[in-house]
Image (cartoon, rainbow, N blue to C red):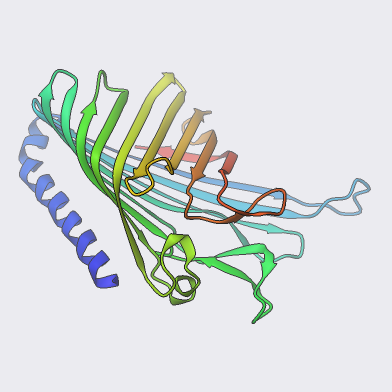
Length: 299
């Protein structure tokens, strides 16, 4: 299974490199390619000594790297974005714990069909970098925190063909009646549990369905950047059971190297069982928000 995934990723990179090489001379003379990068590093520390109000010492470090490369010509467009994020928190005498961990690659190729409409092909790949644990539960065999995730366990690959509506440079809506969502769990411990919707002992689950993806991104003010993306996948086998991923971030530029950001991420996946706030276990809306102030560098 690892060989299959590696082959898919290598093929995608080769095709991307081919497109770059074909347009390299053109890009040097005009501006068909628009490329950029944003890197952010945030740090916070709370230290207490003889503090009557109570509390614990805390250290938090988080990082974010966004890369994009977009090509636009008269009859075609090619948009690529890569988002990498990782964060760690230390609270009191507890060890380091993850606070953020994601790798998201989105690529969309479009060919003009009519004004504001394109035939489109979409690739959306998501996973994480390191192991994840449920710190509210322990493994009955080892006594350690319950191990629940790892790199490529899970990973999600959504590929499809459809149409994109692009009325301007800020908004686009993608609809695909033919999409394949593949769930990877390349970890024997987790696959044996049947984690993330795969059959126990299996490493992959494939679902055919329809996809809707919408994105809005622009500088709403000179020093405020807004980006929001939502993806909805409905498997044909259970069409009303939808998988939703939503990410929204607003970045406030303080000066050349300092910025503040507020992000909200929401996930609903019927394949994922979580411990709900009321103590029951099952699918639920997953919600994460992050307010950060730190160093930011944009190219």
